[in-house]
Length: 475
Image (cartoon, rainbow, N blue to C red; front, side, top):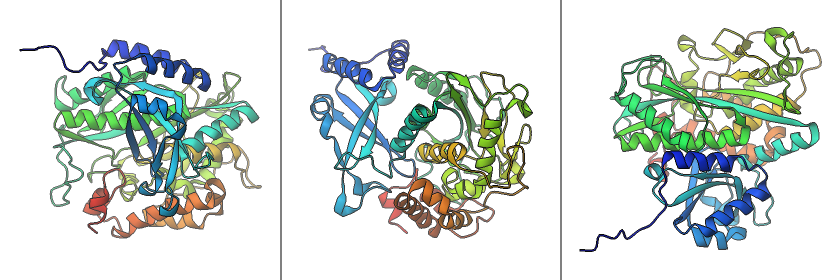
């Protein structure tokens, strides 16, 4: 009997992967990255496929696996049908192009993604290679390049993404409000047994993303039972957004392998804490953190305070970008540490923005109202562009705190404010604004106008990270 393996695809240890991904991350020049990685792919016969990733307008991750040789031969003509992707082109103008961002290359753990694969993110362009208006990864990347060139600014971000681990595979797709979800752990903040289901899941996920080049910092069980959080380090905002989508993908895959479901619904179960994506942001100039001022209030500079007040000023209009689902408004419940107050505080965790205790290196603001199911590229585009480029009202001052207000209580209230906002039209462009809000209106119409006291079937089954064409058409 022949025992010779029939396949010889690349499979590397986690230590080897981490070394390769760390080296890849150090090549930040796009041209140098392209040359280095094309050379590697051309010479490594054990790579069978390149996974190309992009995000739709709602933040759902899409992936195409290209045969490696076809991918290399077709780099200047990678196309896909944009009419099948939410918020992209119409049927009569369906062809769109994928433009690979070689600085995003990631070497993948074979036990999560299968052997012999590498992954890259791509930006979307039209047939004419003009960047596509609904592709907010491309727009965020272009904006960061612009502020670096015109103002000398660099934007950095670190997310704190909370999620829940639920019993059973595909627990979201089979959700029934009469039954709800089944939690796999009854522990709480920082508490889980060393080898319980939650801890095994956290450990496996942390190991996998560490091998993928994430610089892990800490991981733990969160406040609610069966809730988790895995933190990774500050990096530039585009890379951080890529990592958010990959982190959620790995969480879901690891959970499925364990016979469970990782969900990032903001509030999958009533009467316990929901999930946020606390978004830590800072700006640097000439390598110096310009949010820091040791003599400033709470150690924050005038630039930092202006950034905060601009966001607070536009908070009602921005809310649909950072709380983009029906379920997200269930999380904004003041009884569970909900950051629904349009104010800033160093200590009050009910505030939309918190100023963490920090030093010259770590000075930042923490936008606590961002939901984990938001489109990270769109959310950061809105927050950054508002904090940097918007103007405060003429009667405002950088040290003046707006009167206490609250974020919208339902997605319908948020949609109304968003649609009426001339600022949102200016920020996103009329077409992209219209495409985004159309999807929000569609899902809002499939749900009761009021949230009520229990999680409804529709807010789970028609959620943009859960639904597919079959479920969507069941309405």
